[in-house]
Image 1: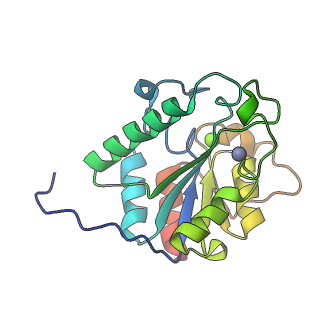
Image 2 (image 1 turned 90 degrees about the horizontal axis):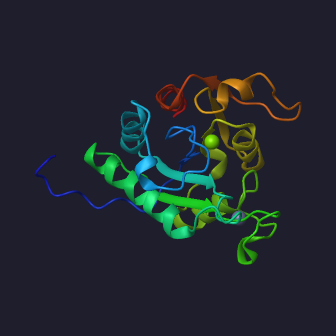
Length: 199
Ligand SMILES: [Mg+2]
Ligand SMILES: [Zn+2]
């Protein structure tokens, strides 16, 4: 760890990278119900640090319908994100915002059982980042391992990258006719490199 005092994180950005969580930043393990099960890919911290240093807002956008389904509660999701933040901080990287959708139209927990505007591919969380950070979605990027992540990118006019980790390799084989990625790459570090080349 550096002994320099950390400089305050800027809270205003022109551009963001919206990162899916499961299968993109961390290993896809099904419904992640315990923070101990968080496992970064070996390149995750480097990949996020590169984006931080490029001056991009790094915004996690995750569908966590396990909350609506009653598999775990929001405290668990917060604990998972706290663990991720701690591990990233050890490597000199950070995520600027952790946004997730706890809803699902077919849930079991009444307060979360709804059609919402924040479940990807809906754009609610991108709009929220626009308000909180001042970013321009059309100059931003979306990275994920599923076509619904790519569809979010299309919905907001961002450039979009499908990674082959998580479900990505199988998703690549069954692209919906109406969704196209700007790039399909092996993993998040390759996605970060691709994004740097577009700045
Ligand atoms: Mg995913
Ligand atoms: Zn939602």
